[in-house]
Length: 337
Image 1 (cartoon, helix red, strand yellow):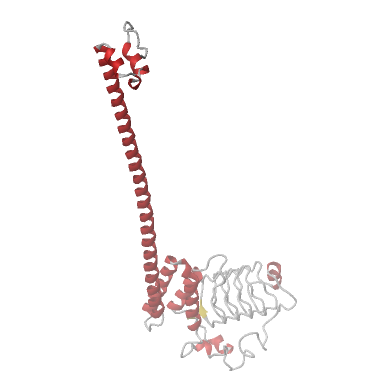
Image 2 (image 1 turned 45 degrees about the vertical axis):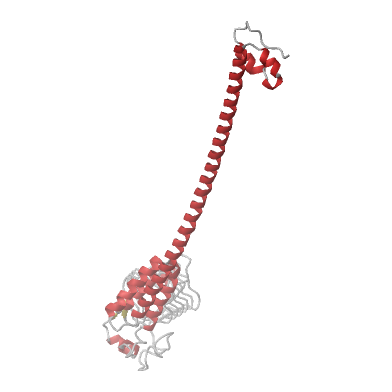
């Protein structure tokens, strides 16, 4: 028979719960125990079963909680993935729709450039400027379109050509009134120039012909003016810094207060040009014709600009020029293309 705790102990039940194993007692041994001991053993056994059931219930509860938490995490993650995919799809659709709108706006604005109404053409130019702001990747394309508009609307391309394009230099001497640049052409030139950013290729106005034009205070900085015809043009106060004006015709041009700093005027014709207070700092005047210029002496020009032995100074004289007619007395057109 297994040893039982002394009945005289002050706390018999804990001893029984801690050390007694009912399975170790035979039926005879249990029958030999006093009733109160058997009752204690029964209560202890019942207590252990209750504890086991509670432990199992808690384990099941914890398992269900863990599974619930896991499913919650998976559901949340799936929701986040679906939300991200939906957002990306929405952004793609929005981007596609936006690009489609920009394409439609661009096509309509370019179409309106050919309108016979100047107000419509001006509206299309401002629309193109807005599109360039909304779609930076189209900025250079829009700049090129506006520059092409300027080139296709110079004085000598339009039909009939401006009087300045069929006059000789001697005739222009007496035709003193300068022709203002049409508002749409000037707007296209201004917007195209404003769309240039550091590092871009220069906006291309090369070979345009605007003899006797009024372009005072125009901002053409860094533009490509190679081979342009600005005979007798009013460019007073204009910003022509860093322009590429190789071979430009600036015969008798008014350049007072103009900023020509760091401009490339190599081989340009500035015959009888006005240079009062012009900024020629760093201007490349190699091979340029500076005969008859007023406002600056040859010494003042050579002090601030880049010249060479082929840079010509001196008094006015008749004879072949780099642009214009063969002489100031010829009746041949001044600006043949």
